[in-house]
Image 1 (cartoon, protein in one colour):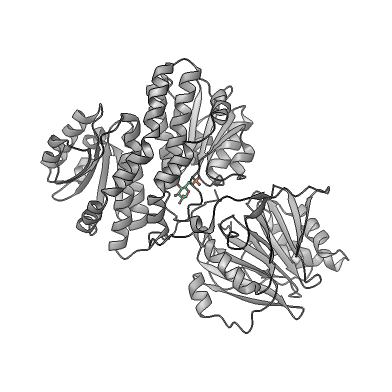
Image 2 (cartoon, rainbow, N blue to C red; image 1 turned 90 degrees about the vertical axis):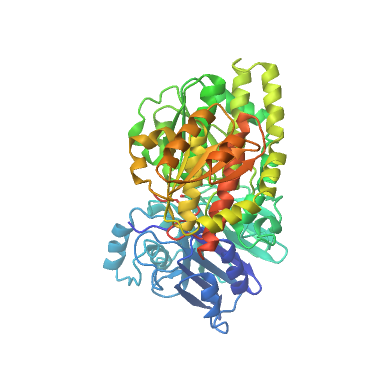
Length: 602
Ligand code: G6P
């Protein structure tokens, strides 16, 4: 299967190529192995594309070839088939008068390609996308105008697609199609734009329209015509984005990841403002049969919440990795699945959601992306308020997921009578202290940089904890491994003696998450086991915990806090640690190899 996680951008405005390249830079987090731009000039399509990152591409660009007012661009992440010039988008038809950029996966492209080849079409890439311009060409040969030819092609194509199409037959138009993959339209004083997400549009406009599945839009300067693919006009519903461009940029930080780590107090403060009506609607979906599902970091939020719900509600809920959900779970009748996904587009999570819905489960979505597929598929959803997260490694979206899930847990507890009104009030007040406590923790993180330097040459690390902070440990290990490429494992400290401890020898790095909670005593026991084998101990502890300082080689003190807040507070130094280790190793923390921010393939 050839498939992509990609960013697409199109515009109708003066100086289109520059605008497209600017837009693509903001979409680079979606993929960065090849890039391409096509514009209409002198009634011809001018096309430039290549393997590599956007800055490299711009460096080698012959700008005299690319000028015009209508164009499309693409930034690609290949999962199969070499990232190379031929496979880079845009793709053209045989007559080279139609250009297409696409994000998604076409399921029946092989069959379509064979049919088109039999009709004499010539293909120049291994991509699934290339069938689209040739199918449009077929429709136009039969006399259809561009948009109608796109509609006809779309009806024969199976799979997911967000596409932007331009053609020389109508050189002042841009056609945009959405099915499953995200696509957003923006209209500003200087032109019309279309992109995979909102931040790419922000330099040009704040008036945006989130396209719904199976719709097609025709954009002209100053005019947007929206329809369902099956026919029937749709009234375009624009809204004003409250994010400003600065929020989507680095605000003076060297990387998005560290900026986003420092964004966390604000993101949490905003998430704490989730209206009670939203929480109530979400809480009403929860019963005693609850599954929590997500991938990567979002799964860690699920795991953490399962401990929280068990402790505060007395309900044993089951966290299940989305990629395993369909195999691991069958009895879903009368259950609720809480689907956690910052992007709302992760294919594994969407697959779990569709499977669960098919078996009668209700879906509660927790996402950072309004208008994403998760919000469309859910019976209710809570939108975390992180704003755009550009760094590939999830940071602020994780803490806001935990915040939203804690608020939800408390609300369910109150409604079901499992938490008294007094306890609900006092725990809500504790939650409100969180942004300040995170700020205080961040204020201490200069020390983490020193420790990152000390440990940056290690080849292995364990991240260990007990209870709810097992999820914190797993998240710390994931952050370190994904951006620094150091082998790191996070698992329950009590499991060491059942196998992993055999790896421990002199100087083996063990990071313990050991705040002053009910597990502390037993965690100290595990530290001693590791120390006895010569391990180097770096502990995250509650301030002033002298005993833990004593048994650790290095420590980081988080502020004294209620147990409820320790998973968030202890995550912060682990994020900062991973960030600095990656830097000291000369790696780009925003763009780890082989990873993408939003994985829309199974
Ligand atoms: C990718 C990202 C991870 C993320 C996971 C789930 O693998 O690289 O950082 O945790 O997807 O993403 P989601 O958008 O569903 O939270």
